[in-house]
Length: 200
Image (cartoon, rainbow, N blue to C red; front, top):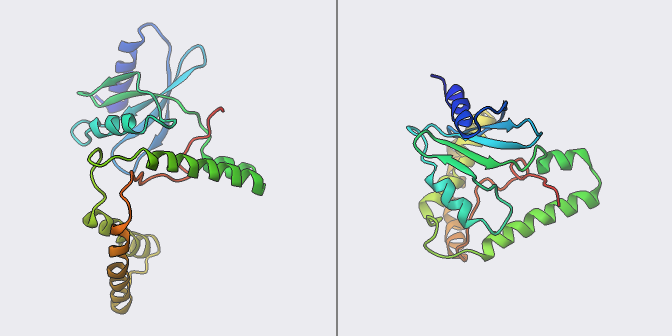
């Protein structure tokens, strides 16, 4: 049976005799997909589909609890074995869409400062030993997304030997300063495409 059909069966088991409309909402870079379930009264929830043989949703739930001091979706229902999760629906308007819709500098400033304030709130709540450390290996891997993914794959122009040497020298020079900074929670996808504009 297809994952979408299993997801609909799971929703039916949670809400028997309820006509729920299910539509695709988004996908992640990994194996997770998200669907919007709309109920007869017009309310909606997001349903995460994370195939259990490919994804472990325990870290998602853990980080949701760690980040609970900001507006992150509640999880009213979860089926760990099937890889389904019912999430609070934070709406359809991303910060990116809001920024594109209203180009006034004052609106951009307000939204972006609100995003920065949220990031600061997350970082101020940071505690050691709660999340995996952003260590040298992870930081190096993240930095190397530029030559490996952006330059080589996105632009189709891999770095030549001289450029690669310059890049590696730059990384080597930056790493000690980066690793010496205070350790705080890092949300690696904290971008305007992923932040939702919610009421209030």
